[in-house]
Length: 403
Image (cartoon, rainbow, N blue to C red):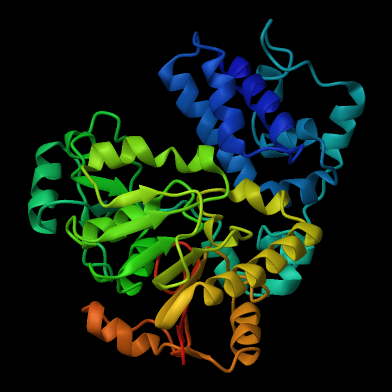
């Protein structure tokens, strides 16, 4: 493809993505799937350019004084020879109009407001107010894998022989990390179930669930089953983990993963099985603000109304968990959010509202399970972030049910 045609594809994609109706990765994948004639090099250029624009959307909108995709692209390309791109061939974006040329000449450089500099919608910035954290969440994420079978040292050696260079994660004893993008489609270790994709913070959450083979366990909001799979692996095939999700179709995606990873102690379930769970794990539906490194477009689809809905669901899930956890059992509350609305505020209100619940001391639990410095100041809950732990943003609190 000529460069002009590449940028026309970029324009079409951001025009659709900036409607803020659907995740960008799905839109990009569908676009490229329907255009099989686009070569691999062109696909890479288009994809990387689109993500770069998404990551700098607020600044580009500010400079353009507009949310129009075409104006945003023009600002993104303002230092290029625009005549070689716009109107340069049959598949190029249309040529610049007289008005657009005048508009481009009149663009001014202004100091970014702090929320724009942070690449965060104003209403969310007002909640977070941490420029350094927000900037760290706008950087691409590392490639984290979990070792599913065998020793970490042996897996690292096997991957090197495949030409893939990973290092041990600093906290998780079952994690490995690459600072570069990794294509696992042809990776033997991945195909054979030796490794699985999982961010280090998510691995740590699974470890801190502290599940024993004799425990009755449910991963209640399992999604596609990432934590269920990690816990099952930690148990070395012993015990049983029930995996539940309100979206049964989504949960069924766990089946090929179970087969590839040779895991047989995870059972998808449609309903709760009694009120005597030793571990009731809630990976709660949340804003996903902690995963903006991987999904920077998600910040523009989140609304105050949606956040309010989520916090209501989170509080309801904790009530459900308490009801169905045995005395002495534990409820594990996890989000991939950095917002206090979904984290500290939710768990503090829950504990204050129930005399038969207490926080588990996470520092003590960490020291029992993980041979690395405890990365937090509080013992009631644990927060991960790319700024603090070089992971996705995660929140964890664990409660014990008293008599």
